[in-house]
Length: 376
Image (cartoon, rainbow, N blue to C red; front, side, top):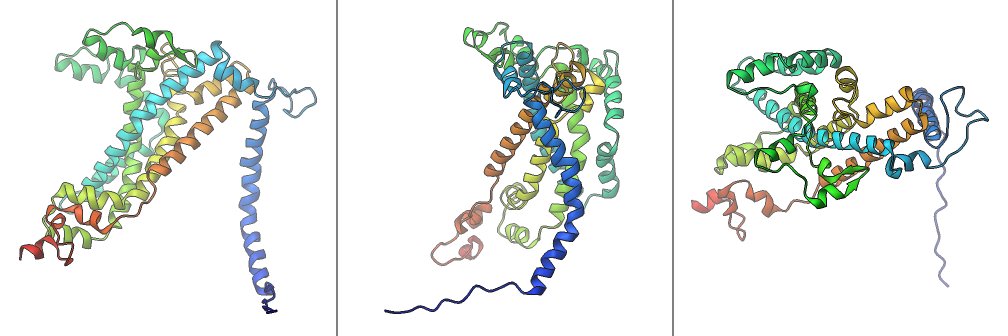
């Protein structure tokens, strides 16, 4: 019989234990703060969402009853006004997210590329000018937007110069896509879209697009957030090495090919950050709605965050308001995970790397020479 000697488990030295203890002592203040002001309130809100708390006294008082998932069922399948309002808020916010996130990402990346060019004079001025709306109070920007997009505001004055009669932006509840379809003669919903509903809203209304009023908020979101994300992209661009760019230029790659196949893949971590922050911010839009339209006209600017506020503080339905907040939390987490999967790092083969330029694509795979060397 062969006896295999095993090494006894190593004991942690006193120095290692001391370092661990010191680490926990250093992080304990922030852990206590997070526990008191984040974990505990979230736990209390979760309890409120499954209880019938009326807002009076402690939510843990003996008179507060446990109702399970009734508040969630009322929102997601109750068939009443609560379900319809929640469906409207999700529809409005979904169109808001679908338009704001891609547009603000593209605009911020374009601005970063422009102000990063060495040939541009006054780059510091343009960086400050583009970033300035991001540090301005959202309430002040919303009030300014109400003046600009009023019936007699500056936006409609400019449109009148080119022969376009501007709408009453914040009083127009019609959907943008429905308006476009009406221009080509489609004014009635197909039976399959009119008869089927989701969260109490006909599918035809889900496809109405953002209302004209919500479109003004979409423009405002792009205007106020692109500057912040421009700085993130600008910092990432300035950290990129120029060796690969120079090699691509030597092999005849065009500016668009260098950007699409070299620059943009290297910006993937920053792109994920920008998309994640944009996704979270757009699903939590509240102050613009509260200051501007309070959900009107005809609830076409109602959002889940504002509906949660009005349900709890206005209608005294605290359980329903907390349930809306947690459904919104689940939506944000799921979409963030899906986004992470789409933008995850993938293994890139050498052949794919060689596709950044037409000359490099014709490389001799047997000798490893580039297209330029092959032509020689």
